Length: 130
Image 1 (cartoon, one colour):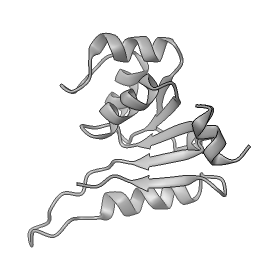
Image 2: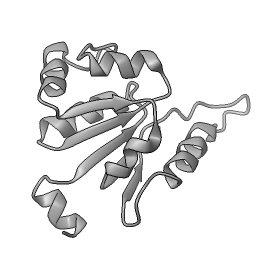
Image 3: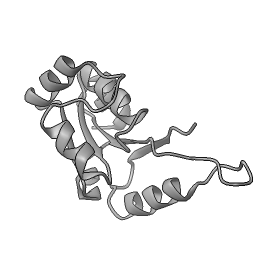
């Protein structure tokens, strides 16, 4: 099945790298739309909170997060291995400014390097950076 059809049929599995203030609300929104979402984060606290259905940031509704997790629509992992299951991956990691007011892309670079080892050919990768 091609990617466009999988997306249209909501059979595409969506990955989100970085479950912080951008990534977690994005993961919840996509899961709410009917897509299975798998998140990856380096924070054990973030991963365990998501898997317990417990919100840790202000922009996500506690009950909605718990419902999506309980329905199997959203789960989180510390390991990039789970990205092998994904058809689309959205990267939402920090790009803080350095002392010269230039974006520090080291989080993006680390995420891309880990993804490169764990995605299948044909996976759509989207970078969300602010």
